[in-house]
Image (cartoon, rainbow, N blue to C red; front, side):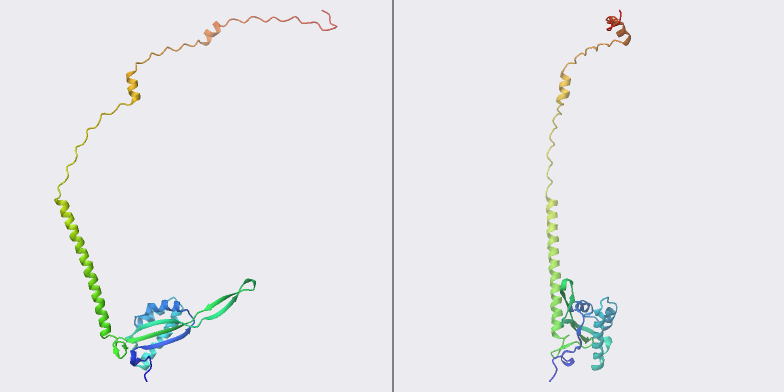
Length: 241
């Protein structure tokens, strides 16, 4: 009885690492960069990746290449990463002491990393048929048809817009120019009320200012003051006149 997953059934070489001490989310970020690449490019990508989990993924990739080379006689240079995914593993629960006798929970995540390889020369086999057979050809044809239909629709819309623009420009060119309305005559400027009143009123003669007397004239006009009369001094008591 053949196995559920085997190279004869699928044409894929598999390698898996279980209970890797990293969360599945962190592993998936790195697997997205190497999915669909050749083994050589994937190794270079993992070598210069700044994430720590890239070292564990490189070990899984090395195991898959070894399985393909030893068990199935495939050349490492012809291998491509067909699929790479990570599932959640067991969560290790720990506690950290906190203030006032309390404790906070710590969840240490694990994940299962799986990498599937296929050869460039022979496509992946699924259910006894070639993956590059009718299904893939149909998918490529349908995609090409969708792209062609989309481009055709865009072209038709552009043509319709250009035609409408040309018709509008032609109609605007044929339409006679409207004559301009004659300019209205300007009304005479009204004189300001203050200026008009100043023009109508007669000038009033100003009275000459009275001349102030000089200091010499003022002294001459002043009368001499009369001398004051002093009262006789009364003798004090006991004194003789």
